[in-house]
Image 1 (cartoon, helix red, strand yellow):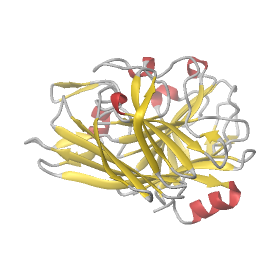
Image 2 (tube, rainbow, N blue to C red):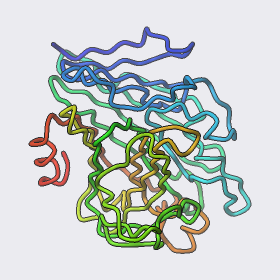
Image 3 (tube, helix red, strand yellow):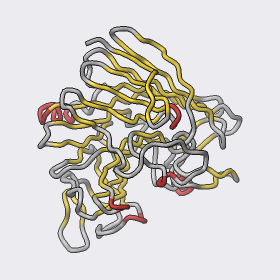
Length: 328
């Protein structure tokens, strides 16, 4: 099968862009910030992204509360996470990208490769955020190229993070090449210490929990963790019973931490795990600025970096993915 592209589809009243090859079918919603709504692995007949069971994607407006519009899929979070005021300018919840329409155009569309560019201009701050999605013939990889530019006259201190929400199932495993874990103070829950070495987390009841082994979807837990001191640029969730994994590869010099939000039937009775490679931490941008743990964009300067989302078949491919430090 060759690579195909279509812009003729509608999803819940919004335009849907479809990129498709023999391995994957990817659905993108430009009107929701270029949200990657769906990544279907044809080989496994499986949707790899999580979708909210009670909320479909719908158009938002600038400044709304993110959680009340969070329908799943893969959003972009920039220039902040928690709503915050920086230098007198209010930044909206989870940033500016996810709630605003993106302009888009087809860069390349042949039988061997499809590339689509989506772009935003900032409102609170003078930025240009551009991502290019590329699907090549027969590859089980969605390739993304990002460019984030400061078009203003002052330096900017920001967060940028990926936000793919993934489904949970019994026996699912978390793969992180991190050395330390910091627990977000608002989600300390059962954890007995605010930070610890990966993967063994001391818990209040005594003993520890191996964080590589994810809780069952209905366990009632909620996690918000920051994985730090990366040895490589990747993160992944594997589903051993289904023989499939979802991995994200990135440059660890750019995305220097991996946040993990997991709700295992806890928050709003939902069950999903969100892998969030980010340019710094913690989630509150003002505190991250104080700790100098943010992305700095000088005036007239842009950041360019690549990310790869991969569908891995079986334990051998997952092991090779970890051994190689992701996919490039």
